Image (cartoon, rainbow, N blue to C red):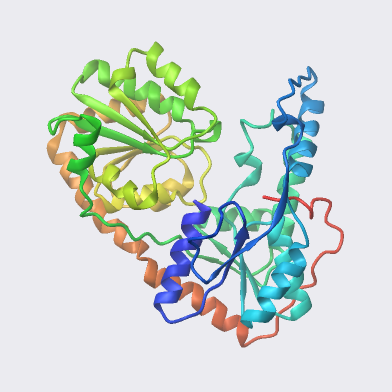
Length: 401
């Protein structure tokens, strides 16, 4: 979600005639990067957990602490990141810095913004205390450390952008006093992309009703609930298929679950699909399923609406905001998801009406108008004094995200 948000905003700002610089890590070789992308070099330390050693610990608290230290000290560590970012700032004469995460490059960028007197804006994309669930055994101390840092970081910015009212209220509850404005991520899709070609490639005939899920395959996304719900739907309505788009550590266990439930032949795990090809998968589908419990906005919900897909998802505040007025089904249980899926399959008028409303609602997420809202923040900051003092002793300021 974050790379999509950054890329969308950058493209829209450039279309408005502004110069945009993106600073990120050297995960790719950079040979195909446009001239506005700068990659910060880093040293990759695999950490013990990725070294191939078999490590176990019966004490859950100690395991959480070990995981936190190993993945913080391991992974990617930027070498001289501050100097590299400063070189870009000096070369490009930066007017505003916009950070998108509170660790690593984010903390370094904020420090430099303060030193150089440059306005600094932050989009609060992720509830990290929930993002790590399923990776860490739940532990109040570690959740508190992560949560405290992310909200404390938000309090150091000149302006904070929240992708939804739900996130704004969350920030306020955590005593963030920086100015906050709700600006969701805009979505620009190509709805004329050939869904028929995708169906043909996957061997799905035109009469089959296709459900689709698009997400990372991690515990936080609850894709297992989608597998369970669809398997039951398929047992009642055999002429159905599910596309599970995305990849992650849970893929093998999800494939096994599909087999145990007798739906392996009716479920296609596509893996990660390049964004330009993703539109064809939406276009090939009829109903969108989503089961994440924690979302700041749910960009995939907006994408699904743009393709006129009726949505069935777990009832969370961010989803309610995004799907407002569409008639989408917000459910609390797998049984409800099954019930609503069958209801849609049996009611063509309802499918058509929700599809129409969804396309209409998607227009509220026009990326150009939302980019103008972000630019208005940049412009207002450039006319006022900025520079909330940056905290000097963050206990987690060296984390790389």
